[in-house]
Each structure stands twice: as C-alpha cells, then as structure tokens.
Length: 469
Image (cartoon, rainbow, N blue to C red):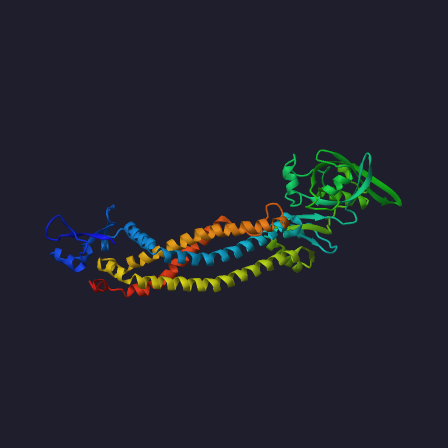
C-alpha cells in the first residue's frame, strides 16, 4: 500500500502544513483547509518503508510528465492486462506484416526482373511501314517515350563480318544512339564513356563476339556490304572498331549496333547509291527525304508500355510488346492487394473491437481511481490522456515485438525459398519505412480504440471518489 503525504496549501496563512497520516481520508483532509480549493491540493506518493517522493500537482497545475509517470505506474501495476493487450495486437500485426511482406517480396522480385531486361519495355512495329522524320519527332515528344531510334529495311540491315583466322559470319545491323537502354550498361562500363558513336564504331552482342573469336573493346573487325548492280555482284568494306560487348542476358541475338548514319549508308549502298563518307561508289542519291520502315521505342516504365501501344494504335501502327508478361505481374499485384485489404478489414475489425472493449473494461475497473483523480482536479481531457498514453504505449511495444517476429518469419521464408531465387532476391521483404509506418499505424490504432472509452470517462463524477470513505 502507498502512504500518502498530504500537502495542504493554506489560503489565509503563508507556508505549508504537512500531515503525516497513513489513514487520512479525503473528508479528513478538508478539515485542514480554511478555504477548501480542490484545485490546490497535491500529494506525495511514497513506497514503504522509504522512497523518493514525487510531487504530483493536480488540476490546472498537472504537468504532463507527472501524469505520464502515474500512467506508467498504473500500466506496470496491471501488468497481466498490459501483456494480454500487447500479445493481442501482435497476433494481429504479424500476419498482416507477413502478407504485406510476401506481396512486396514476390511482386518486387518479378518487377525487378522485368525492369532489368530493357527488352520488356521495348515496342517495335509488327509489319513493314513507311515512317518519315516528322513521325519520329512527334513520337519522341510522348511523355512515356524514353528512347526512340529509327531503323531501315530488315533485308538491307545485314553485314558480313570478316576476321583473319575465322570464317566469315553474317550478323544483323541495328541502329543505336545516345541513351539506348540495350547499351546503357556496356557504355557505362566502357572506356569511351557516353560520347556519340562514330561512323566506323560498333557494339557487338556477346554471341557475335564469341563467334568471331572473343572480340572485345578496342579490337577491329572488317565489315562487308554486298549488292547486285547491273547483273554484277559488288561489295564494299569498312574497318570497324569494337567499342564494347553487350551481355547475352540483355540481347541474345547476333546483332551489330552501329550509328544511324552507318545504317542509312548500308541501305543507300544496296540501293545502288554512293556513300562518299566511306568511299563507296555508286549513283548519286536524289535529294528526297529518307524513309524508314522500322523503329525501336522504349517506355520509361512498365506502365508506359501499354500507354505507348494504345497511342501507336491511334496512328494505325500495330506493335509487338511484352504487355502480356507485364499485365500478369500487375494482376498478381492486384490480387495480393485485395487479399491484404480483405484480411486487414476482417482481422483488423476484430482486433479493433477487442482493443476497444478492453479499454472500456479497463476504465470500468479504474473508475473509482479515476474519480479520485477527478476529485483532486483532473479534467476530463487529462483523464482521457491517462488512458490514451497507456494505449499508445501498448501499440508501441506491440509494434516492436511484431517487427521482430516478422523479421524472423521473413528470414525463415527467404532461407527456405532461397535456392529458387536469384542473387539479392527475396520472397518476403519490407522496406524499413514501411515497418516504421506500420508501427505508427499500430499506435494510432490503439489510440483510436481507447477513444471508445471516452463516453465512460465522461460519466465519471468527482463525487464518486468520496463515496464509502
């Protein structure tokens, strides 16, 4: 039991009078005041036999830190109820965090795999059409367009590679330029940096480099372009410098990436025209706009792929995309979201009702104590703060325990399915900011539940504290 040291502030006489009576009651206390003013009464609570006294001024003079100390003592006194409240909240949070972690882990892994391969954000026409410069200028202005490069006819976009000691090999030409997603990794790791590609410079895919004896950056290879003119076979050669090798997982085909000028030069030569820049003879090309038949277009993100596809359909251009794979991941994401929201509403509703009923029951048990505090001058808001602080503490402690348990569950799941995942991929994972948001939400959840007890607090009258004394 506590021994109360009642400190009475005399309204007419200066100074204080201390009364040391362990059996002192509130009715006895009023005898020591010539003008009783309950808002000026304060007391000291000391544990027997000795202890450090803590002054708790009531009414208008209540200090929030002192109110918190009282709430902490009451929280520790009802330790069994406090533990039950914490475990009840943990039982709600851990499954929710696990479902959300699996959603973020699986969807994040699938999305990362799509983003790591630029081909998944590529759009290319399905047929052969004619596109002029104005078409590409307008398309490049689309907000979802990240990179656009025209290409010539497929039949003319081939080149024969020749290297001493190795058989000649035919590869497909592909135009490229600054910012090409297929070459981003190769350009950043190469010695040439991000400077524009030259007329006689190329990037090779890993398949082509291996076919020609393991070509690498800095090596040279001879390129040959052939044509039929006047019933004669002709060819032109150009020495090409390799700037880099594109990894096989980005594009597994046999491709040679060259500048758009080189791409146009090969088509002009095959059409019988001369290319003075490369020393290739032929007819003088008429001064007419160049027409392209293909292009490579890349979206800025996965969502932009479908928007660009729909935009091109309005221009009567049908395109090939990886929209089916992208839509599969989106559908899976939506399904996980529906499952999570359903569980949150159903389980969360039950948890909220449990927390609210517990808070109301706790207020009912503390009714006499709270009425005494009200008798000593505490306002309704201060009594509500008393319960709100305990609820917030329950939410905070429950969130810490739930976060720890979730990390353990996530570790077990990632370890079990680790053999089927790539490096750095996880089945169950949550960002730290999401764990922090979940903790804040748990505190708000418990505070909201404790607010249901306000009607019970509002009915508490100070006179209840003087009954049976």
